[in-house]
Amino acid sequence: AEPLAAKRTARIFCIANQKGGVGKTTTAVNLAAALVAQEQRVLLVDLDPQGNATMGSGIDKRELQATLYQVLIGEAGIAEAAKASESGYDVLPSNRELAGAEIDLVELEERERQLKHAIAAVADRYDFVLIDCPPTLSLLTLNGLAAAHGVIIPMQCEYFALEGLSDLVNTIKRVHANLNPDLRVIGLLRVMFDPRVTLQQQVSAQLESHFGDKVFKSIIPRNVRLAEAPSYGLPGVVFDPASKGAQAYVAFGAEMIERMKTL
Ligand code: ADP
Ligand code: MG
Image 1 (cartoon, rainbow, N blue to C red):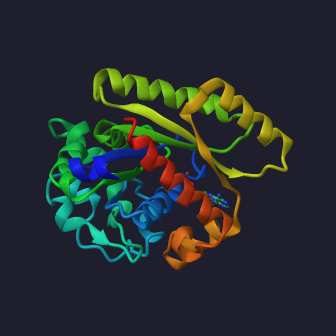
Image 2 (image 1 turned 90 degrees about the vertical axis):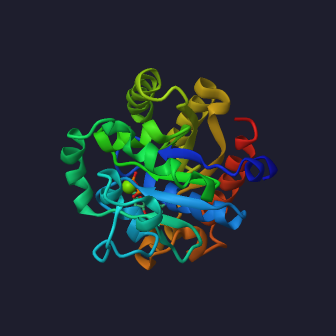
């Protein structure tokens, strides 16, 4: 972890996929907790008005003074709006109010860069900023992509997975060209994996041959403990550290830290 400590400025990643229910939020909260377990300082930004990352981190989205919404419209800084989670990372929380930001942002100059500027003000406090994106290509998601160094793409190894992927990769290319020359795909993360399903093995092998080392070595299995944890307001990594799912996310955290050294 020396190069990170020496630089002491956050690496910023979006967890994105234009499909819903593919494991973005599960990956965001568990990677946050896995990085904390490896002595990293982490801020998790909940960019989805559904507030699942907020609730899944044990922060009640109905009882918030300031949220990401106030940050995006310039009424609060991240330092004021962020909350410490029980799991050791900070959360910039969100709730339904965030959906209104789409409209309010249109009025602002540099409307795609509000999040980037807000993160810049706290970047020296964190090693990692993880942004849990909504399943849309909205102005919110553009704010995430404009702020990030890279994108982590969780995906299920299903028949249509590759199709959805080309849309996302095209979007990332456009953002790279127009908004954020730093942006790149960091890697594809296979999630909810069931090795007993032949099709999943085939798609997984296809991903490796197509995308080579853009595919993370860590594979997240389908594991019920990961699905149960959010109702306790905890990431699976904290809720049941011995579970297969938790161990896979801890391994993924280590892989991310390793990969940072080559970026
Ligand atoms: P997204 O944020 O992309 O919409 P979620 O992370 O909310 O997706 O996951 C969708 C659903 O799948 C949730 O109910 C979640 O608990 C469950 N889930 C995610 N990953 C796993 C996994 N590895 N094993 C079992 N259930 C999972
Ligand atoms: Mg989600």
